[in-house]
Length: 301
Image (cartoon, rainbow, N blue to C red; front, side):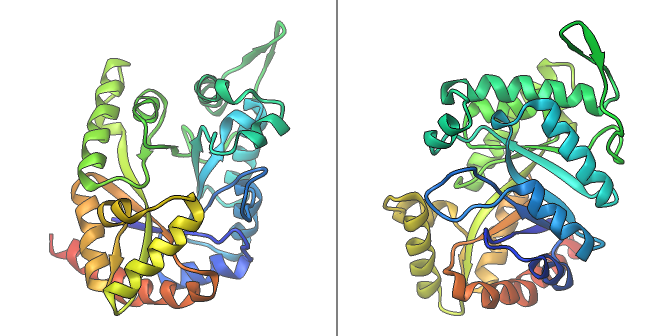
């Protein structure tokens, strides 16, 4: 099992360097253009992480593909893959939580699913070195990404549409705020869709975007996660936290991560449900007390 760490929106390159030193397998960055809380841009954040790391994979979690002209997203992804030495993992999502950012970018929010599907098709062709038709003129991406045939493509989301999108055009399906059972059922749907489109179902694997909180006191971890997620989503999160958020002692969180692994999530991307001032303490606790438990369990399987 791989474990990644979601970078803070107020990221500095040292955050990525420390994550690599702590033993994480990936560093991840999300994005919004305009939002109700601090946000960054995934391509820029990961470009800053690339020169201060050598081993960790660089995941955009997620790039809001419908807000980009697809050839521009392909160019940015290919460039980032090259400057990082072939370490990019490109996560895409449809967004839509804040329609204002779509309006500001001149993109109808109701078209986000269609634009994402069309964008994934264009990305696939350009990454493969194929020409696309631009008003009767063939155009190719040059230079291509280092990774062949392409950087891994993740599809983020909880909906059935995201599952099927991953089956048609992705390598990894990554839901969030779901139970292990939901992950298992969604991955089956993604693989069924892959088979319907002539793909090997085994080529589509699972991941989980895990809001998490670790504390020696499980009650403190639960309350911290509840407060952080209520602030993020603006709603009561009691039921969702208990069903879908790994929290508690390091042993409890490692056991919960293992449940998602057994459901088909080969990678966990940890997003910290903690206030900014408690972030480094929790990162160190995960690195010292959670990762070794998962590694030891994997070696014993």
